Length: 392
Image (cartoon, rainbow, N blue to C red):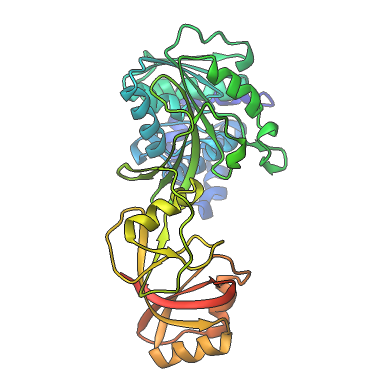
């Protein structure tokens, strides 16, 4: 079956659904044997499609609640580009707090954001131009019992009239035939079009890659960087009612714990103290290291490195704290000797401003012993340095 939409539609038939139930949780090592057995009674294309969905559902459990992942449908690209459910729920909650009752979700993909919006009580128009993606998004709305709140439409988002909606959410595709796209104007649709669509709406949220240059952010937008469990997931540009232009925030999930930018100057560089603070990735991407430094009464170890050092331990939810026991100029032999002396067998290697690969260093020093330690490969006042310590 060459038509991917027809192949997907076959999964929604009673036979297809029965196959999905039968292959759920199939061990990858046993896939060939399972496929061979099932192809005796079912079309080969349908068996392959069911096993493909089973694989994607297993992977999706890392992004979606397991009870959702086991019922939802995916495409490989749709899964890769879908928002983690916790992040989508946070963004949907903020839109609801801003009084939004309806959203035009442009470039909706497989519908993960539309699901989060609908569960927040928001009526959604979900739009995508790819026929297979639209079919999957529609199936997901039905599978999760949200079809009454989610209308899925196949269309070019540039042709959609969004004037009847309280807000617009745009999630341009950031993957092409060669992988990730880093130029915002190479997004599909381009960032410039997405910004125009956002500014034309009463309220809008525009999802972009977290590595976007700050100079590419429009002055009319508020910017938010979001991490989940310490991993930076996305940046969101907010436009319209209730959004302060030029505002910057870092949101850490679970929580949320929100750090607002206050326009502080860069922290001073100071000598390494007893404690080292490693700011969350969202804080670093949002350029809010100065806010963390002020909170803990610290300074930078180097003007180009986002490590904060202080003599006193102060609580902060925006950074991980480490007690530093040793400071050494970079050198494998010196580190190996110190670790042997301390009987360190479990070594965590972190780096910032160093070209050394953590795994290569770990192989060279061959840690052995009952104790653990963390080594930071970094620069201190411009010099390659190793800071050794342990989490507080």
